[in-house]
Amino acid sequence: MQRETASSAITIDGLTKDFGDVRAVDGLTLDIPEGEIFGLLGPNGSGKTTTISCLTGLIQPTGGTAKVCGSDAWSERSEARKVLGVCPQETALYQYLTAEENVAIFAELCSVPKVERSRRVDYVLEKVGLSENADRRVAKFSGGMKRRVSIAMALVHDPKIVFLDEPTVGMDPQSRRAVWDFVMELKDRGKTVLLTTHHMEEAEELCDRVGVIDHGKLIELGSPADLKSKHQARDLEDVFITLTGRKIREEA
Amino acid sequence: MSLHRVLALAEKEWKRTVREPAVLFMIILFPVMMTLAFGASFGATAGSQPATFTVAAVDLSGANSSASTQFMQALGATGVVKVHSYQSNGTAQSALSQGQVQAVLVIPPSFDTSVQSYLVHPSQPGMWVNSTLPLYLDKASLVSAQLLPSVVRNVLTSSVLGIKQDAALSPVGLSDPSMVEVTSQTVFDTFVPGLFAFASIFLIMMVGQSFTGDRESGMLRRVLTTPTSASEIMTAQVLSYLLIGAVQALLVLGTAYALGYRPDTGAPGVVLGLLIAVVFSVCNVGFGLIAATLARSAGGATGISFIFLLPQMFLGTYVGMALSGSAQAAGRFVPSFYVTDALNSLFTRGADITSTTVITDLAVVTASSFFILAAGILLFRKFGRV
Image (cartoon, rainbow over all chains, first blue to last red; front, top):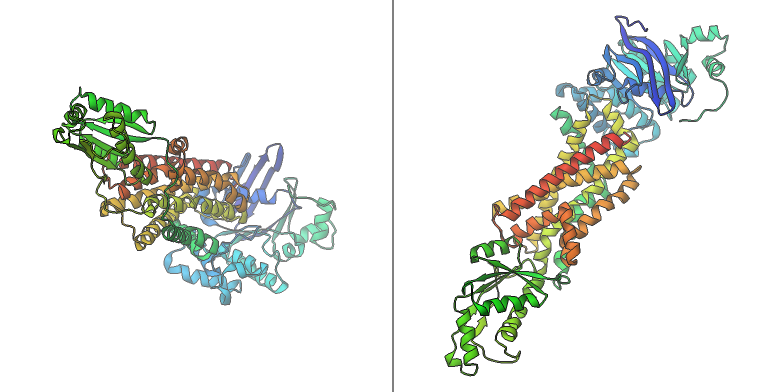
């Protein structure tokens, strides 16, 4: 049984999710305290996105529980979602809206008060370096710019917990560095960040702790430094390969 | 349910309509261009004729009049006319204004006497007792309006009076055909009621594309990670397409009006007609959701939309005027039929807004629209792969 501490932002206890005969998440137990940047690492099809889908209340767990700030992610999902900001793996944007309109609609959907809305939209767009392109339709943006709009949409309502699913895919080094700085700023402001990434240097740079998940099970947990020391590895990528092997995985 | 969120999503959908050229064309420009094209082009035929026409006969000559009985039987024997007896001219006229019959034929009290006077003195016009049979025609059916006077006249002269076609004189004449409160009419006028449903059914394609597009891009899932509920998303979609449906209906009416079309009803009739067209857009949102449920991509949704679009187009709009009797009977199973029927009754025949046909059509359109919407929502939520 996972112990839920007073400062737990995310508590996962025996979480299981089956899709037919396939067990995507297998008894996952994890506690992420408030203010932590946690990296959920794993090969393709390991169960990361399914875990996030359970945490965002998009799918009902087969067994176990997932809680967000004390609210059950499935049975109390309307409450849980109030404290969440989610940047999904795919670049999900309304292509026919401008960057500003995309962010503004999410401000409205997340009930940002009208008096604050404009200020919040301007703030997050400035943070992701898109102030000058705010009134352009995102259909004309590069892949990296779209990812930054997507991040701004996840953060516009100043959520307590942020899920960033491979946030820097397709970004150039400058953009990636800007996002990293923004994530660190979130931590400084006491936000909890659950990050999934295939870039091990990103996890090493940003995360207080990482959990390695494979075949739906948590197979390793600790700070990047501790894991490198434990596995006598040069970097986190070596740790990852040691734990999950060299065989190429395909998405389910 | 948060009104803020619903309005934000509805506004987003409206922006999509205005900003995406293909959507803008299908939803806004298409109704205008279609109405313009029909208005500018049509002036010829109203299509092939149905198998039979129903004539309301009001026999004022007495129940045992042998001449009137013979006349009715002869009319029925033509195979073109089905005779339904009505007790009074008022009820027959009401049926005509609601499209239940294509003509009203009134047999005057003196009919039997006129026929007998001719049969006794066929070559002495001075001995004849003259009478006139009023014939009222459905102005929404140009084919019946053109055909029925000659059919009735021929039956009257050849079967009842036994007069050859080329005989010049007879004691019984048919009055000039009198359409109910009609002064003039074009073929375009008969098309206009069907254009409302015709324009609206393309919403099926737009809704299908919208939902599959948002699902493909991950936007539906993403919105659902916010406090927004599935009900709010659906309500926003219905609201935005109700607005689009209202704009479409106004565009069709406005364009037709600019081309000279004048609905044969007052302001309440026009408002009710537009309301029926707007309610019908709810039905098309439902069909769009079903198309999105079945389709795996926005392109697929476009194709699947035609499964729902074509029957409504061919069986339930002005296209139906040219169809066979059995095809027209099949039209009673598509909601667009009732939209066109109601608008025909209101705009073309001048039926009262409280008439049975209009109220029945409104009830059928409303009930079927909300049933199809509910089915669409349930299917999409259960099998829509969000």
